[in-house]
Length: 60
Image 1 (tube, rainbow, N blue to C red):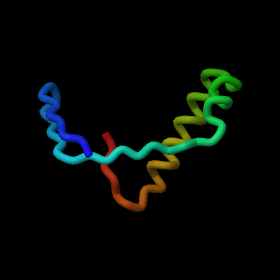
Image 2 (spheres, rainbow, N blue to C red; image 1 turned 60 degrees about the horizontal axis):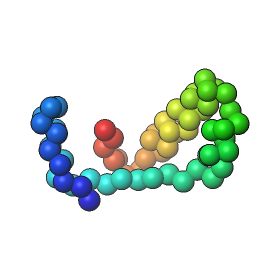
Image 3 (tube, one colour; image 1 turned 90 degrees about the vertical axis):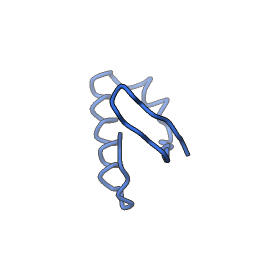
């Protein structure tokens, strides 16, 4: 859980949850993939994870 106040954007977070997705082979993927293609693939992957959210989490 996190407690912080971001006065520059007037955001107050009293409780937070961090979810870290473990992507097997991600480091190898990063080193073996061209930059632009890798950015698109990772972006699509993260959007898929967010869209699959069944807990209605809030994202920052």
